[in-house]
Image (cartoon, rainbow, N blue to C red; front, side):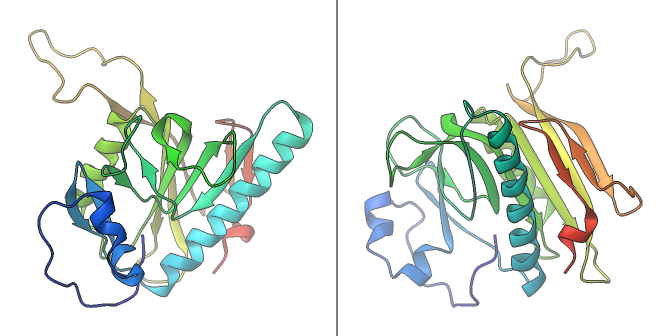
Length: 217
């Protein structure tokens, strides 16, 4: 997620949602709470916002096309919206760059992990592998079925690669005596680069077709 270039004030290591709400909005929007722990979101370049918007718009178009053919389906596509990981409470949440969730039963409800089908992150040069790995692990632990990563080209204003990761429903087979470190994980299920002339073609969570021209800077 990209946020304004504002100085980070001194805050306690842990906060509640209620305490977070009392902060100025321009500060609060820079923060996620991981089981109440304050995690500052890293800032990204202008390309980050542009490509977040491009991907969100393309996914929303695909969702609308799918819903027009299957009226019983109802999806919402959004960007930089909090996803609360527990069934209740608000002091454990992540803010993906883009997401797809089931239509909620009434307006102005919080989006919970149980409502969420797909979360995605646009990786800027400032994002580190340990940081993104930790966030990805939390998405998996919350049971969100799909995780997408959009990697930017470091030399040009363009997307270099898009990856779709599927939630592994059961631990994979390992060498005898070895147990997985975490109970949930994502497995790479789709990958596209600009050399794929047909663009992004994927069938989950609904048919998705995104030509590269739709993702241009």
